[in-house]
Each structure stands twice: as C-alpha cells, then as structure tokens.
Length: 186
Image (cartoon, rainbow, N blue to C red):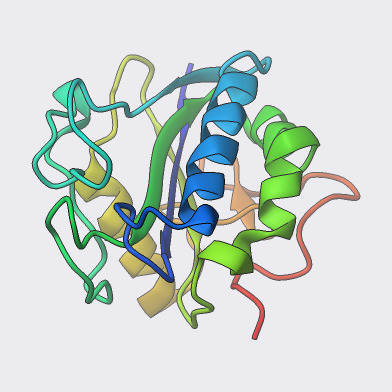
C-alpha cells in the first residue's frame, strides 16, 4: 500500500545556533511536537539525523533519507553557526492522519506562532507525494517536489492538503477540512 511523504520547509528569522529565547523556544516546542506526532495514528517515520549539533543539517548523517538538501530560494547559511531553516521529511499512512496530527494539539499551537520564528514567504511551505510501500523518500525528493509545486502548481506529483490526490492520481479532498491557503499568509 502506498505511503504519503511530506516535506516542509521554512526560512527562520535567526540561525538555529542563536542562543536567544525565541530560538530556544522554537527548539523546545519542536521537541514536544515530534514527541506527540510520533505517537499519532498514521505516523510512520521522519528523517532524523544520526548525529549533529544544532544547525548541522548539511553535515549530519541522515541515513536512508539521503543527503540534506534545501530549495533554491534558501539563501542563508549552511554551517552549524549560520543555518537558519526549519525542514521536516516524514511518512504517513494517509492524508487524514497527517491532517489530524498537524492541525490539532501542540503542532497547531506551533503553527499559530510560526511567524514568531519563520519568515513570511511567497513559496509553499509543504508538499505531499505518494511513495511505494517501503520506499524512504530523500531530502532531494522533497526539495524537487516543493520546487515543482512552486513552479507548476499542484499535480499528483506534488500536492497540498487543499488540493490533494489519491495514490492513483485522481483528485481527492478531505471533507470539510483544509487550511485557508496552501501558501503562507502575507
């Protein structure tokens, strides 16, 4: 049975190594989000570095998830001291459990505060695509699909909650749900 891959990306206002209270809060809330989401029905796995310090995304070993990659529009640092991004790559059983995990509880609280940490952007912040059972998507896959979504709009290859597709490529919709916009607010 196909699995749903999700890549999220945002540019942070300050580097991950910043010792300030907002960055510390971002990390603390992020840890709580991962703990809660990893227990959510429908969650399968997420990319997690095998080692690394705060901000060492580019140097970290991501195992089967491949070498870390970012969209072409990311123009901030790439060292542990200068990296200023928030990115996730995860696998889900279906759209409904992913939606329920993302738009409820502690993750919803984090989304409500995202502009405390993340710069507003004209670029999409997330993209979904289907992968065959047992396939681990790579960071490069996520970047490629997010850039495709930005450049060409939604398609079975790269889609959002609001404009989604079933594994067979037919359009589908979560009844009565969906964020107001697939792009970040201005």
